[in-house]
Length: 416
Image (cartoon, rainbow, N blue to C red):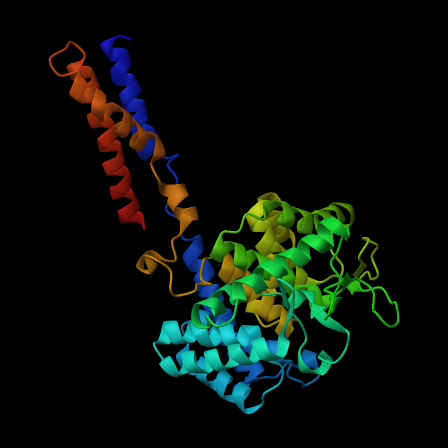
């Protein structure tokens, strides 16, 4: 290559990094964080009364899971006063022992530095073990609890499986093998999707408390279970667990998404009830399900995730932010999905936690990859070329690449 050709190549490298085609700094994350905060503020104003979640769409009742979701949202929103109000009402009105409530207390203890939350979490976790965990051999099933203890078959709510929480419980309750509960949860999902070949998971399955036999049909009536609203949370829960604990469960996650992707391509919609073999039982769309599926699709089917965001979730968010037609459960799932997508659903005990949350999307967008790689490649050659006829060329190319990195950084600082 001639000297003039080499100079032109170096100038081209420099201009490619600082010219008009350079990627601008991303403000999308900060806009989304603002919207996340706004949605939590709206929820507190409209749906919380003295710490109690009251949704007109819920008929004035307060499902126990709504209290758990509100506590998680308050912890992840860094809202200690909001958290205390919700928890105060929740513990004055005990219902089911809720894994999300226990997890929220652990997160609050870490985030707000309040040891009393940790003590209350440990007490609740021990109560959950005593009332709800069924051991059969080496398997530990999370069941519905006290009301079913004398029956041969106990009920497992598939949408309530929370392996991410069980792993956190193991850290503070070493007397009980909570990690085995997480492993049993995944074994149950493998049984459903691979052994039984279900297309959509049923809301409930049944386990014999003596033999460990699992059944899809009701053990007394023989009625077949169906996929419905109680199973919606499963997909977000598996996504959160994958983000926290790096499970190698991609084949399972893809199987869980497959039938929904097919239904989406066929109907441009996903409905709120299906038979486990895939037949639709309804023609009513399920907005909360779009959010839960989006969380899982971001891990293994990003194109599907983009389609859900572009065609469904963006409009739902727009309506929610201007207070239109957004039931309280949809508020929860829009928020939880977005918080997971933005990396805000943290454990608060991560190694190097001061670096989190890290905006990988913005990092990839603004990283000057070409000149940075050029610097790394050219540096040893610049050292080896000293005293040869290539010295000036190689050192010049290295300086151009280094200058490109520096100018890219200065441009980012000026415009961000």
